[in-house]
Image (cartoon, rainbow, N blue to C red; front, side):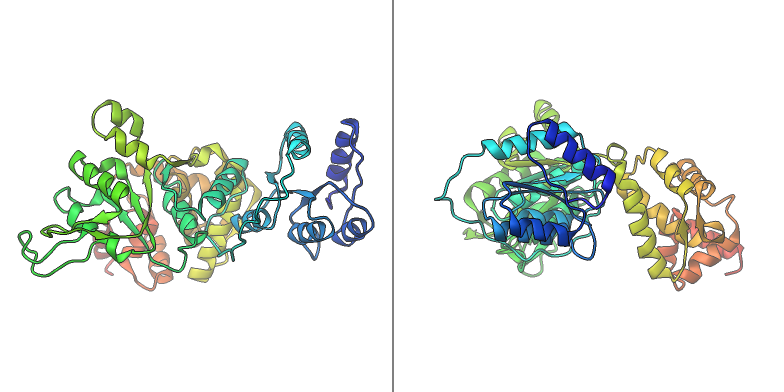
Amino acid sequence: MEDDDTWRDTLVTFLTLNDYQVDGAGSTREAADRLHSMRYDVVISDIYIDEKTGIEVLQAARKENPDCAVILMSGRGSMETISAGLSGGAVEYLAKPFELDDLLEIVRRTEAKPEDDDDEETDVYDLPVTDMIATSQKMVDICKTVFKVAPTDATVLIEGETGTGKELIARMVHQYSRRTTQPFIAVDCGSIAPTLIESELFGALKGSYTGADRDRIGVFEAAHNGTVFLDEIGDTDLEFQGKLLRFLQEREIRPVGASKSKAINVRVVAATNKDLPKLVEEGKFREDLWFRLNVVRIAIPPLCERQEDIKLLAHFFLKKYNARYTTSARMTETGERALQEYSWPGNVRQLQAMIERLSILAPNGRVDEAAVKEGIAQMDSRGGAGDTLADTEAEQIRRVMAATGGNKSRTAKILGIERKTLYRKLEKMGL
């Protein structure tokens, strides 16, 4: 089922040459008629077709033949459509463009799959909306992993560079789980002093340390029956790692100063931008904790390795910030190409920040090649902190201040400078 005539003919010809009897359909109505009149062992369908979708084709195919193997494909899918397809019984989801041999391998795999009439059907969950915008095969594969592991209570370790979306993946694991109605608490382990992280996570009794003027409930207890996301787990010290290992083994916490432990039911999802096996070799990370965390491992690729997603993300962010700041910036084809040619060392977070800035500052509201390159040049010239708007006109600051309603913190973030730098600029401008 494919509404693109050329692509549909290509698929039909390719599979026919590989000894399959193939029928093609160009609309959901035609597909429904064929499914009703004939029994098909395999159905291949695009997601976005006409007034209906490939999800409805999937449902119709499974209704007519519960044993039918459905393969979905799309060039602009979202995590919701992927998950809806997989939860509805699709055997595979392919991101366009894909190699025809990959499709052939999947078709052959469905033929070789042994039948087991005694298998119980898996539960189908209501799927929440997420902010994960992606269509590349690498991200589709990650979504498949998330969808498989989420209903379990397995510990998940997410790896990836800063800005790739590790917390977003962690939230998806929680949202697609049976714990979705319970708390999700994220902890940035790297921002908590080693002397305080134990009390932060396990809690503390009044008087257990200097400044403990009351009993304090820790993160694990506050998230009872929910999920705790431990970000930057590689930044913790060995002493805390030992206590975390004990918790993962015993599922009990002992608040600082307490004489007894208490049972806590939480799922742990950890993340790191460091090479944990290397830290293990260097004696900076416990090997037994590494094994305990590394039950299901999800490695998020950097944005430069999934260029198919850059255009999709850019349009998503532009729509978001046009709505927030009541602007009407437009993305041009040259702007799209310029975005895709950049390496994005700051990954999705960097792309989002630049699109937010361009939604306000792009000349004449056009996010074209010149605007993108100027934005990239400003980011590259900033380095770290300091006075970074030396060559930026005061009018730009006024426009951002107006868009944010005078919120200086937000303005500084959009312009990519420190607040104190913005204050100096505003003082010079007489604002």
